[in-house]
Image (cartoon, rainbow, N blue to C red; front, side):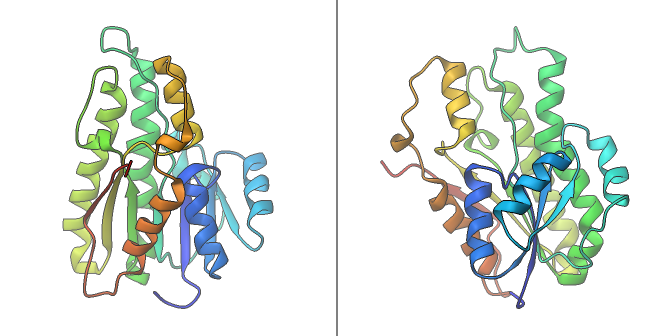
Length: 232
């Protein structure tokens, strides 16, 4: 990667996103951290000195274009890392359209829109788009319908984008982590009515290692799909 590569990251506030942001920040890369509102942006900027922020609510993909037009996105984007996500479990017999839409908007439509808005800068840099998907992007279990649908859709988005942008030198990677110790995982356990033991699941740092490996791979190769499973 070029010196002082610029990375746009969603979900840098916790879990895998925070681990990846720390890794890239420590080595001196330029970070542009997405935040849903100005208060959150201020917190993120304080945690990563020198980082820039981009504000826009992923739950309202229709407004992202307007939000970005009133800010200054970077002129070149070496990588766009889609790491933010939401989960709301429930059986198909009980999930409301609101629950479906919220997960589809945040997990699928917003990443598609953010990618569309930053594609010119990604093409300039011959950059890399990384989608942090989920094991649910490959297999759907009981009570995971809406979340899994959003993640199956994210796989389709990544695969189509890879074919479309290959000629422009843009690389596209989907990462499918198994259950990872994060605030989202704690919430899932709460919804499942199970006790949460972080030591049973993947450390976000391990997923960050795999993700940065894909990012740093020499230009003659591209990781298309990367599945990361708990090792114990």
